[in-house]
Image (cartoon, rainbow over all chains, first blue to last red; front, side):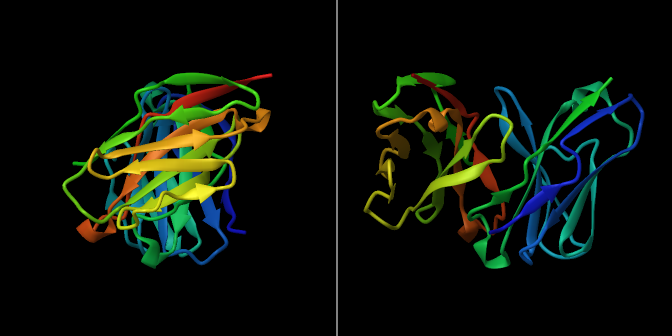
Amino acid sequence: DVKVTQSSRYLVKRTGEKVFLECVQDMDHENMFWYRQDPGLGLRLIYFSYDVKMKEKGDIPEGYSVSREKKERFSLILESASTNQTSMYLCASNRGQDRAGELFFGEGSRLTVL
Amino acid sequence: AQTVTQSQPEMSVQEAETVTLSCTYDTSESDYYLFWYKQPPSRQMILVIRQEAYKQQNATENRFSVNFQKAAKSFSLKISDSQLGDAAMYFCAYGNPGAGSYQLTFGKGTKLSVIP
């Protein structure tokens, strides 16, 4: 089974803090994604990566950055957290040839910014 | 840009009954994928069922089936013999690799409650 692991299920941070959300997948997937999930808004893509050190902006990249130094790991970074970044963050992955195809998700990281 | 619309924010169904969740999408493409994902409370999102647009036959996975109406751009999910474990958020999603895109576009979700 594909396993996508997000390092923190729940985080509480202060405004202005730097926040790292880590995601690791164990199936050698080329593509990795970070989504933000908010009630009534569904899932919105923040960033994705189709290869090591490659990244592409999604629909809502403002206030976020990402890092992909190794194939299995994709990190989401909030340089200076703000209260409007309180949300559920979902990491997902799939194979290179499954572009726009089935995604495998982690359990999510619920971030609260005070 | 493609859009996916789920018009039912919440639905409920009696255990053992059948329920249908609606999804419509907007696209000018002819070849694409459609998905239904399930997100149980505090658990990870998993794929329920997928449909390739070029296939006329509706996809089925055990108690889950879809009604894919390509001309109407409609993709509804039918859950038969509903069980308590079916209670979850359900998301409809669209993907079009032919457009060079990697991402899926998701609807806003439908929260399904199952009444014992």
